[in-house]
Image (tube, rainbow, N blue to C red; front, side, top):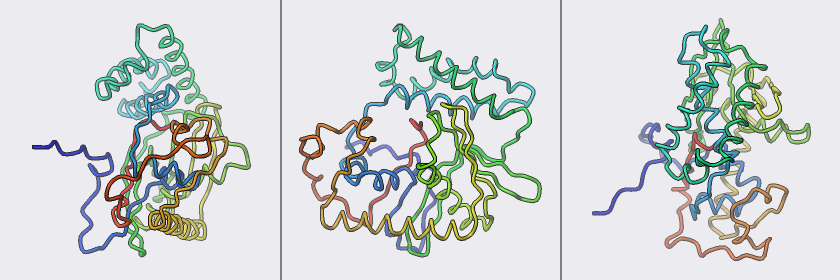
Length: 300
């Protein structure tokens, strides 16, 4: 008897969609992949090619875990010293869940020590931006989803939702990289508007503030959406999915070379670098089943 494939984090949380002929599913990360490079989207979503986790990505996962656990403690214990003490136990739990990470960063290696120092520095920077003793998040690592009138399912994981008196919502996301320049802020905010759209459609409440916390550079990016923003975002995600549909029907998953290629794990298979993509999986993937995984892990 064959072993069933493990469920994605999204599938573990998703509720059955009864009586709705859903055309597909999309997360902000996979939508961003397609906008950046259709071929990258294909490699990740259709070919499901493995990507070795990078130290930067694992750092992001570790910091997210510590910050989530920090808010389980009473306010007076949410200190920088306490957070630093949680790093190694969180790392050990991460390796227990993902043993392959042990090969990338062995505690016996000198590089592990310097990597762990960099994690502490990123974590310390959080305390220069927020005072967790004065915060009481309403929800953390919350899975959200909605089916749009177009029958496209949107879903994702939100790092934190803060609820202010009067029912005002603040949506918060931690990033362990550096804040983008002014020219790239719109791309950074797309993910947050995606979340805001889901929350608005599901809860009937417009998030008041979308806040990105960049721990790599110690900066905050805040944005207050309005109804026009979220309607435009809904049009955009529908257009992205239609473009994915066309690429699936035509087989045209063209690369889009950019500076992001420097961090791509698939250069050897990319025509832009002289490579040849693998044949599409047998049977390919029906557009109706383009069900995009949403991973809460390895997020930088």
